[in-house]
Length: 271
Ligand code: A2P
Image (cartoon, rainbow, N blue to C red; front, side, top):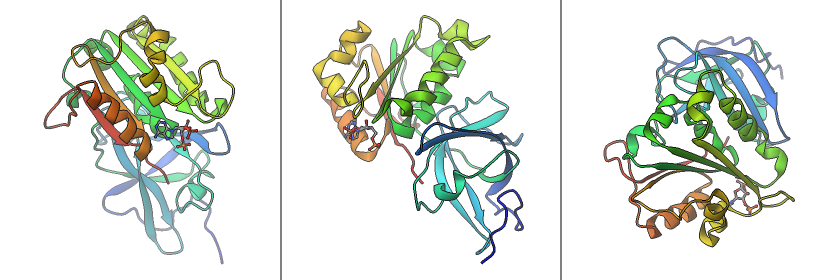
């Protein structure tokens, strides 16, 4: 059996995708990595949306595509993604090996509900994430529109272990120190991280931290309130269901692109 080097696609891209070039890859843990790639000029998206992404299977000549949240903001000339690595996973077992110069398939039609358009105006925006669910928020916290619409932006990230928080921590720090974004984000953007399976200053699932009130006590704010707060949720199916239940219990209404409201949800995609 022969395998083609990743950076030499011998087939043409399918109609609904383009080949883009990997510009940078950073590995955080055995299970998480980030990469950047070229962005076609015609590729437009709203911060928070997802798109199909993948590789050609050189043996079958067929594309292998999965949904991925775009982690870079809509103004960025490049595209960034935050991915898990699944051992034996059809796509991520190969994708985790990409290097600078390799070609990756990018779908042409980004979509999604974790967008500013799906929320009605309010004072405070919460973004609750677990695992790779932080990806759409890495996009949104770097979008000036978020700071035009909200006075306070609270982004939370919960993982099993501390090292899994590196990407979110570094992205928030870089945003606050950014030449232009820094001015908009400072005083508005707040980061709240926690772990569930390793010692950390803040421990526990986000749902537990909301229910116990610890999250709000730590941030010095009042509990979830549809009058003042909006929520975006991204994580596993179970995490979304449990966090959504807490929003509903607080009297919040789920929004969509067609009917903006108090909170929106999207599953963190896995390979
Ligand atoms: P836990 O360690 O208690 O399962 P995973 O890696 O399994 O996707 O989990 C990522 C993070 O999401 C972990 O910290 C995990 O906590 C947490 N988590 C898993 N299920 C839920 C849920 N139903 N509600 C809130 N957080 C959850």
